[in-house]
Image (cartoon, rainbow, N blue to C red):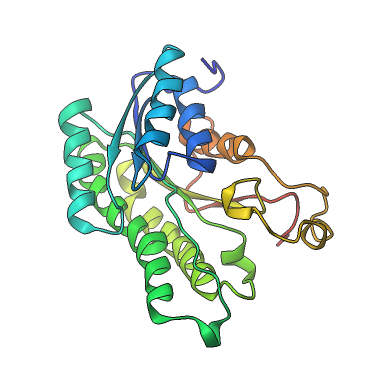
Length: 250
């Protein structure tokens, strides 16, 4: 267990936790002592693999399938976790997809698919979990956005718009929930070595990263763990932590 950030006795939901950044976050939170709900949409085998990694290491975890872009599925996810675990202390809104293409050629369904999952999904999960968090007067909500939401990116108008929206949603919900002891923050990864970044022009991208390398899912998970932990980040809300090797400096 990560003794510097104890989450013992807490329950965390990680959306899109079957692979990549979500997987690393789930494992990191479990190492700090949290019971972790591994949410997935389409990869039951990958999700169960994460659960087995956690449980075989002495942690507690179980998987629940739910498409976070679907309101009914999200309500069911939160209801099931509350029935099974009794409380939800941490929500990590990580699930996301890309449907890249130049704006002039982008199909409307490609726009909607990304907005529905990457932005509306964060809204639906936050709204659904807020009821129980407001009652218990405590909670941590951490949204995984992207530096693309801060700087834009050619060929990713839908993704950039969704991720910029997540930042606005983070700040607004942080202001609404602060009086009840709930913090809402975001982590903005840069280029991280995952399935989503395979096939990119690495040399061109690396020339724009001061640290000169792609990040790892575990480095993003470290920032999430910090924001999920109390009291270390207890006085932070409405903030965006960039984990990008210095790519975007403001």
